[in-house]
Amino acid sequence: MPNPTIPDELICRLRHAERVAVLTGAGISAESGVPTFRDAVTGLWAHYRPEDLATPEAYARDPQLVWNWYQWRRGLVAQAQPNAGHIALAQLEARFPAWTLITQNVDNLHRRAGSRHVVALHGDIARTLCSVEGIEVADWPADGPVPPRCPHCGAGLRPGVVWFGEDLPHAAIDTAFRAAETCDVFLCVGTSTLVYPAAELPFVAHRHRACVVEINPDETPLSPVADYRLAGPAGVVLPALVEALAMADAVTGQA
Ligand code: BV8
Image 1 (cartoon, rainbow, N blue to C red):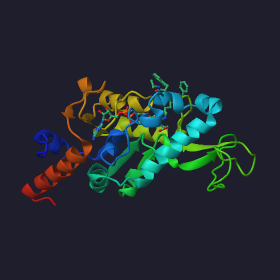
Image 2 (image 1 turned 180 degrees about the horizontal axis):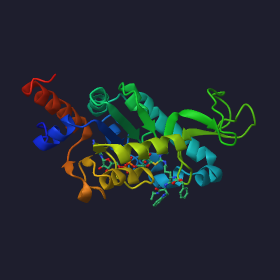
Image 3 (image 1 turned 180 degrees about the vertical axis):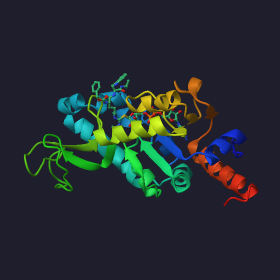
Image 4 (image 1 turned 45 degrees about the vertical axis):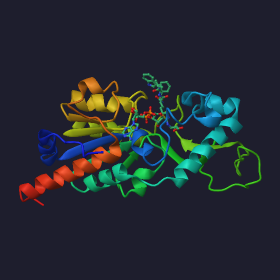
């Protein structure tokens, strides 16, 4: 695929930006083999809506089903490697005095790509918690009950993610909204912008006169208000952005 052209005026905006905020969704991990949320219900899970599995009600109704769905997704995430999109964002972090990378993803691939300042809004699929006390549990007998039991209170264990109907970690959502309200440029990468409150963030940035850039092969509810739409896969567009910035630096002799 030829390198997508990055508009010169966008490169200019980025080269003069001090504060950049980024929101990522499942699309940035698609090229790492992690199914997007819409695609996370294939095969065994084909006849479920993701929203029907990722809720406290679903867990109460059928904890084994929900636990096994997460074990399956954990297996995919464990095999995945950060892709060129994750790596490009880690490279861009060093360039801006203020950089906030906000993710809806629970796969930890941004940190594995070397990003340091990551705000994970929806938790981490690799963590395991007691479904009652919320304490973190590191291991459990492999041949025990499914889901495994909390060694402290005997309740079922659950993945360390935020389910629909559950509140997001307050510190994380506060940091995210503050970054959206104060950024010069907001990059919205690989998200359908359908799940709230995360989906609100690019619109907050837009209302605060930031330059909003959408990177997604498909249109989303954000597309009509985005200042720039780079319609391509994140693993191609983001490295092209890094390269275009480096070229501009070289041309102006500013390394
Ligand atoms: C809450 C963790 C307080 C678990 C997740 C306001 C209006 C309407 C509804 C609500 C509202 N406020 C609250 C709600 C309810 C609900 C909600 O938003 N419902 C939706 C469905 C309408 N929100 C909540 O419940 C939140 N909690 O608000 O608490 C409260 C409580 C009760 C009532 C009121 C308030 C909690 C939300 C978090 C849920 N947990 N994940 C797990 O992973 O199992 S959400 C999960 O789904 C993901 O984390 C992500 O956020 C979302 C999926 O979206 P995307 O990541 O964007 O992925 P998707 O597959 O949709 O799209 C992929 C995109 O990538 C596509 O556009 C595609 O074109 C693109 N793409 C594909 N390939 C590529 C690509 N792009 C670039 N490159 C590629 N290669």
